[in-house]
Structures are given as C-alpha cells and as structure tokens.
Amino acid sequence: MFTFLLVVHALIAASLVGVILIQRSEGGGLTSGGNPGGLMSARGAADFLTRATSILGTIFIVMSIGLAALATMQSGPRTIDTSLARKQAAPAPAAAPAPQAPADNGAVPLAK
Image (cartoon, rainbow, N blue to C red; front, side, top):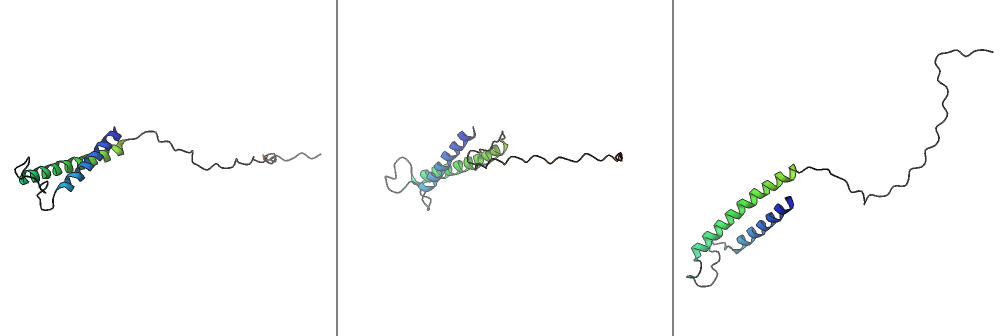
C-alpha cells in the first residue's frame, strides 16, 4: 500500500513540475503562438493552469503528510541483514578452569 501511494505521489510531483513549467512568468501560459480563437483563449489557459497548479499542489502536500504519518505507523519485525558482516575468527577454546580449593567452612582440621 505504501509503495503504491509513493508511486502515485511521484506521478503527482512530476505533473506538478510539468504544469508549473508550462506556465509563463507573465501569467499567459500556453499562449506562445497559435490562433487566439483556438481551443483555449489566453485567459482560459491561464485560469486552467492556475487551477491545476493549486489542485496538484494541495494534493501533493496532503499526500506528503499522509505518507509521513503512514511511514511512522508502520511497524513490524525488523531484522538485521548480517550477510555483509565481517566473519570473525572462531573464539579460542577456553582453558580448563583451575581446581578450586575446598571451601573453608570454619572447621578446624583434625591433628594426627
């Protein structure tokens, strides 16, 4: 689910960049040449691009917040991949422990 939403988010970001780049800085977007009586007038194109930019920007921000919230809520068993860890030398065998003296329980040894 997260991956799907992330792909949709990337598509919205690319669309937003495209719509912004189409616009002219003077506000006359999509009017560089062509017949002014064509499909869109200069005013209509500017209104459409302005509205598309605001809608895509709003969706982008809302999805950013939603994805951040979803990423923090996802919890699952996390495993550490140790396949790239350095192999450590096998530990040296432990030396046999020294024999311990019998415990002194306060008894006096018998004299012979």
